[in-house]
Amino acid sequence: MTTSTPYFVHRAGAGAGAGGVVVVGGISETALPRVNDYSSNKTASTAADVARTQDLQQLTRHNFQIGIAQIAAQYQNGSTCGRELEIFLKATASHNQLWSSKVINTFGGAPRSFIWGNYFWFAPKELCEDLNNPFGITLSNANTSSHLFNVTSPFPVRFTVVYLEFSTPHYIDLKLSFENLIHLGLCFPRSCDADQIRQYTDLYFQSEVFELQREFQLRLKSVAVKIPELRWTFFMQSGTLIFTSILAFVIMLTILAELMHKYKKSLNQQQSGHSKAANKSSTSTNNNNLTAEKQITAKSSSTFEEILLSFRLTENFQRALKLDKSDSFLGVIAGLRTIICLWVTVFHVYYYSLFALTNTALVFAKLEQFILQPVIQACFYVDIFFVISALLHVSNFLANAKQLQLIRNGNFLQNFVLFCKIVFYRYLRLTPVMIITLLLSDMLNDFLNMYSPFYLGPHSGIYCKTNWWYNLLYIHNILDMENICCSWTWYLACEMQFYILFTVLLFIHAKNAKAAKIAFAVLTLGFVAIAWLCNYRNGITFQIDVIHSTLSQLYVKSWVRCVPYIVGVAFGWLMHYYRHHHHHRRRHRHHQQNQQYWQRCVLRTQIFTWA
Image (cartoon, rainbow, N blue to C red; front, side, top):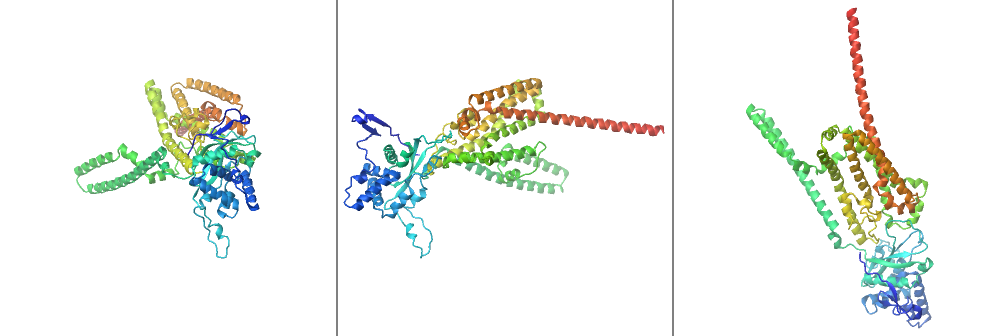
């Protein structure tokens, strides 16, 4: 995005009323033309000229395209940009040039519903490009409107967007994390410089002749300017290069995996043929062949080849669609997790699209309806993920009898190594997808900031230029919500921290169950107290603005979100205890039934013998 130094306003000498001069970006107010100077300094020779001048003045108050063009024409007098703007203004004043009528009909007017958050004051980019390369619609010869499509500008034009921060008492503040800026779309000659257009935009709005600006007491100041177009610099960004390299490497491994699979398959067929032929030979020859086959098989099942074959696309696709379930698989948990995952995904898709939606306040007003509450409250369903994750973590850990025995028999150093190994496996499981997500977000941020008319600042939620390394350490939830790279991944930071904490507790449980239960009780009481205190101090309620303003203090912090994970830990232990106890009861009942059976058999044998 093209940016330039802001143009600050200061006064030189005495006040304006005492002969002081207002300096705007190095340009004095005495040199600043009024927006109607273009028309007033022309001699109106006829009544028609006077009428055209008045129409142009009227347009200046309602169309910022005309007002900015007038100021630019004054400062660019003699340049190519200035001459082309003069042509545009004359054509607009004459009312007989269809191409200029299309410009002011499409660009320059502020849309309605400003109070409800319609800050996109631009038309589609294609409507500006239409003046360079007109659109066409296939019409019959009898249709007389075809001339409307074949209108071109006498000079090349391009679409430019100026972004302005604003202040007004007529503003519904929802406390959203991203910047609310007015997007001003202009269709100016290609010869005009974007930074100069931004300067003239500031000058126009400082004059406060725009009708909507006076109506809503708007104070406007530009922060950036952009010409939305895709350039080769996008493909040279670090995120794009890294992602492209990883993608090419994975594709290469996939191809090599398929070739390796075919090679091993043909090798196995050859070995099968040799085995059949060996059956007809002597016993010694057969033994030699079997020894050779074992050597080939050992060589073909190396660790490197196993890793390479894990990239085989067809096998992974079949494994992903496999319907078989293991003994530890919980269908109810999987179904619940799928439903909640889809629910949360729908919410986040809408939430992270708000930067491109008009009338944002109206959107949230509609979401107040009862039927839409499941969507707007989906952010709180993340707690269910914490419960499920903790339940599976504890139940699977306690069900691994071999690992528990290693912990009980190991010393501190051995258990520390085992603990680091478990956490490292967890890190390897999550981090590759995290890296791909960071790269895709960085690419999306660059693409939207370069090609789209929308503005994505450092608080957009997908800005990853500076804080990406927090994500790789899973500590990014310590940052404010607006500064987190891929801010929806705060959950993984909390989940990893909970995983480490309660894995330590499970190690203690394997060594000393009573000490672990005491520690769990202390942690439960402590986290419940901390969560309540944080919510109380921040005055949490369920109003939209309060929720958004407390995201950094409450929503993403692990010490506030730990209570659902503790509930999952408790239920995971109870489920394991119930299964273990139920299994022993079944074994004891089965043993009692066997004893009763044999006692009855012996009794019947004795009765038969006595008889």
